[in-house]
Structures are given as C-alpha cells and as structure tokens.
Length: 590
Ligand SMILES: Nc1ncnc2c1ncn2[C@@H]1O[C@H](COP(=O)(O)OP(=O)(O)OP(=O)(O)O)[C@@H](O)[C@H]1O
Image (cartoon, rainbow, N blue to C red):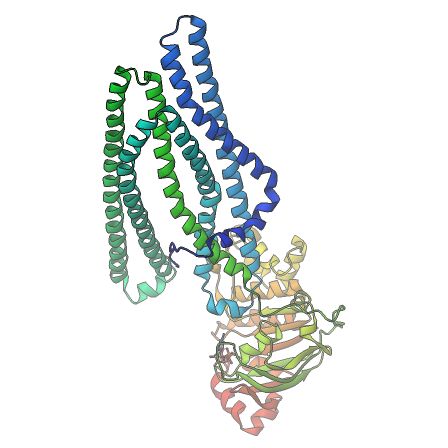
C-alpha cells in the first residue's frame, strides 16, 4: 500500500489546471456554485450589520414598526445565509462527486488497457490506492477546499473592510491580540494534521499486513504461524494506537489554546470597547458589530490556513493520477489492415517467422530464431524445460508484447497490422492458473462472450462437460462460485475455463495444460472437454501430458528460447534427444 505524502509541488497550480478538462462538462453547475458561494458570503457579512441595527435601533426603538423592521431584516439575512450556504454545499459537493467519479472512470479505463509491461513496474495495490485515496483527496479539494478558500477569502476581505469602517482603533488592537491566537493555532494545527496523516498511514500499514495474511490463511495455518502473525498484527495496531493517541493529545492542546486565546482576545477588546461605549466613542451596536466581524475574520484566516494543507495534498494526488493517465501502453493498435484474416471452418493458419524477443526488464533474449508454421486446424504441442520460453511465446501470440525482431502472421497478415481487439477476439486461452471471478457459474462462463444468451451458455457448458456438476450445485447456474472459485475442484475450474473459451469460439486456441495431476475420472472429463474445444480449431498447447503430445500433429521442443527439435512423438522418441529425456520425466499421465 502506498502512503499518502503531502508534497509541495512547484508546478502545483499547473497540475491543478491540468484537471480542468474534468470540470468542463459542468460549466453551468460551476457558475451556480460560485453564485451561491458569493451569496452566502455576502449574507454572512451582512449579519453583524443587522445585529448592530437591532442593538442600536431595535432595543432602543420608539415604535413597534422600527423593532419589526430591524428583526425582519435580520431574519431575511438569515434566510439568505441558509439558502446560499446549503446551495453552495450541494453544488460543490455535487461537483466534487461528479468529477471524482469521472476521474476514477478515466483512470480505470486507462489502466485496464495497459500492457503487461506496465503491471511489471506498477503494483496493483498502488493503482487501487490511487483510485481510492488520491481521488478522495481531489474530491475533498473540489467538494470542500476550493469553495472554503473562496468563501474565506471573501469573508476575510469583507470582514476586514467592515472592521476598519466600524472602528479603526479597535481594529489595530484586535489584530495584535488575534495574531497571538492565530499564529500558535495555525502552527499547532499543522502539527495535528501531520500527526493525523501519520496515524492514517499506520492504520493503512496494519490493514495491508492483515490483507496479505488473510489471503494466505492455509499457508499460515499449515506452518502453524498463527501466533506469530497475531503478534505482528498486534504490534502494527499498537503502533497505530500510539500514533492516534499522540494525535489526540495534540488536538486537545490545540482546542485548549484556540478556545482560551480566542476568548481572551475577544474579552480584552470587549473590555476596552466597554470603556469606549461609556465614553460615547462608539455605540453598543457598533461594538457588537465589530466583534462579530472580528470573529468572522479570525474564522476566515483559520479556514484558509486549513485549506492550504488540503490543497497541497490534492496537488500531490492529482500529480500521481495524471502520471497514471499519461502512461502510454507500449502495445498500440496500428490496424494497417482493415479486414481481418479469413477464418475457415478449421481455424486459422499461423506463421512465426524468425522471432526474437527479450523482456523490457531483461537484457537476455528469451526467444531466438523461432520459426514454425501451423496450418488451419492443426494441433501443435510445445514442450521444453521450465523457463524455456513457452509462456512467453503465448504472450507474443496474443500481442501482450511485440517481438524484438521477426514477426507473427495470421493467415499471412502480420498481427501488428491488425486491430488489437480483432486479434484478441480470434484467440482463446485456457491458462494454467484459471481465474474464476466472484460471481455465479453462469456469469463466469458468459465472460467468454458477454452478449451470449443463457441457452448459449448452457450449450457451451454441456460441450465442456461442466453442465453436470454445475446443475448439482445448490442453485445450479446461479450458484456463487466463491472468491476466486474456492468452492470448485481443479478439474471443475478447468472445465469452466473451457466452457468460457467454447463460448468465445476462437479461431486459435492457446492451451496451457495444468501441471498438477487430476484424479483419473476428473482427468478424463477434462480431456473430453478439451477435445471439444480443439475441434475445428488451430490449437497450440503447452503440453504436460503424454496423451496430448501423442495426438499432436507436430511437437516443438524449446530449450533456452530456441526450437531444438520438431516432429511427432514417435519421431522424437526415436531421436533420443531432449524430448525423449523430457518425455520420461515430465508427463504427468505416464
Ligand atoms: N515479465 C518478465 N520479465 C522478465 N523476464 C521474464 C518475464 N517473464 C518471464 N521471464 C523470463 O523469461 C524466461 C522464459 O519464461 P517463460 O515463462 O516463457 O518460461 P516457460 O517455458 O513458460 O516456463 P514454465 O514451464 O516454468 O512455465 C524465464 O527465464 C523467465 O525468467
């Protein structure tokens, strides 16, 4: 989990300006928000003036109508304050929510399209933290801080002018005393905020720790490390507790200082003001008006100092989000070719020509001089020791990476010249580690073709021999499959994945056989399901089973990224090379 750090950014306001495109769609609402803000601030500034009228005219009135007028004026002002404030609150919160939602959506839709290269350097936890915490900071900025800043600046300017108009002498005096209150309050306020952040970070650390360990419960229990993990978590929350108590102490002290100093300053001015009233230098109403303006000004200063911190944090957050939005995927859709390759009833032809590849993070080539050809409908098995580059070949076929040199052709068309979406629609993958989403069986299969009807899903499940076990689940196809498919056996998960691919109906099937052995019955069911999946399709399979290689039209033997042998099973066994040795050791169904 990344921690939120407040950082002052010299490009700060430029960063915030870069967020303005997100504000553009909401011009009308923005204008309304500013209008309500000015209305609320002006009405607030009119309150002390109305009070003075009441004290000087209302309480010493000669006629009922004068009393009524002063009180009615105050009531009208109060109505405007209420209206302006609530409208401002609604409008800025609305804008904050809307813009945050738009930013979240933009970041997510950008990130989900990134190539694997991006995820090698960016931790998914970091993306989540940016999506949650950073967007919340921006929401606070738009929904609260900006409007608070403008409101407080208006109140500060208006209040100051009114104070000096009311009594220049008392103004100078109160400034001296208010400064004595504001300076320590602001300094202590900063410390409280820093401590609050520290406390939040500590809680985030504890929850990151818990989250990782909760995902590994079976490992912890089988190593009987529960007590150690409990202690680690306890230590972590104790650190968080200490941080929280330190923050609370600082906050209490701040409350004490702010209240005591604030009142002292007001009492002092009132005390001197009382003498001024006695000497007829000012009226009681003017004194009250003055004090109220002073309170407004003090509040405005404190408010502004508060939003400065929020703004800095939001600038940091925006920077991180914009950085994420500016990342360009290394895999771009080129689409030189408008039409997609003709797929015949047997699938698609694949030509791999002189392929060489190295991962961006690794100087050593993982694949070198790899060339082979597959005719539509053929089954090719790829075998080789661990780390030979088999999975990498699959990655390149799906264009998760582009080759360093050489090319991959589908029916003679370079896959780089195809629309990425069109290319991937032609390919179906059954990986080793099958992903089951926390959803029901129906939706997990429908993931292969989102617009498939229920009948199509049933048909695919029947072909993949998944129908039988799904029907026996408590709620059939509507049964929730548990987090990451925890309620399914290995063989069942594979059959769900096969059903998914059948529904997608790809021209090329990439199959990474599971290395873990299934029991004989389950194995047989998966084999039958795979037969259905491979039917009338070009198939490349990373083979771990003897039965698979025996049925392959051709076997490619990879070692250190090079094809060192090709042929059928019987050819290669006769050659007594690497394949013959691997065959003895590797196949799980021998
Ligand atoms: N994202 C990556 N960045 C850098 N190197 C990688 C990356 N993925 C794999 N490699 C390296 O590429 C080589 C080939 O890996 P690959 O996963 O293709 O092998 P494999 O034949 O599928 O192995 P296994 O049978 O164990 O799955 C390995 O040396 C591996 O360390």
